[in-house]
Image 1 (cartoon, rainbow, N blue to C red):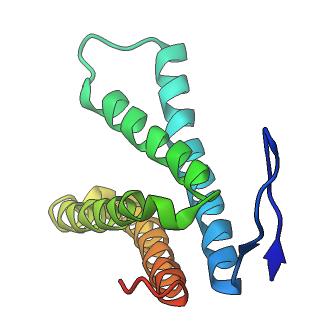
Image 2 (cartoon, helix red, strand yellow):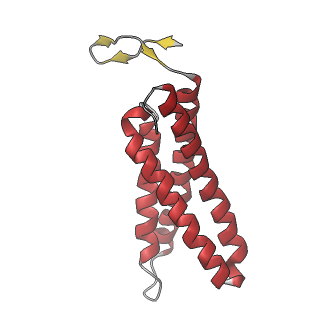
Length: 144
């Protein structure tokens, strides 16, 4: 499907948007919003409750990094082919995160349920980005 896009200086040349690229754009927005909200919410509640002196300091920094990843995934939806390295980072960091969560679930039986739920969500987002990212790259003739 051909569609024009409007820039500050007027209408730019027509661009081709395949169904695969459109699906990738939707996945990027949904996953980006989920990652952003899932990390901004605990960050805000952490600071509203007041950091405790005995509490850890790692979690807020982690939430900030992942929240920004979510923001940039949403921004990448505008032109996914220009952000292939960001999408690859999101996929492989999610895979690494899921592996660590599986190892923690094995070692912490009392937290197993919530960790495995996190593995499912994180793994699903990685798989969706990987599958749709590869399809969009193939339809553009870029390989992947």
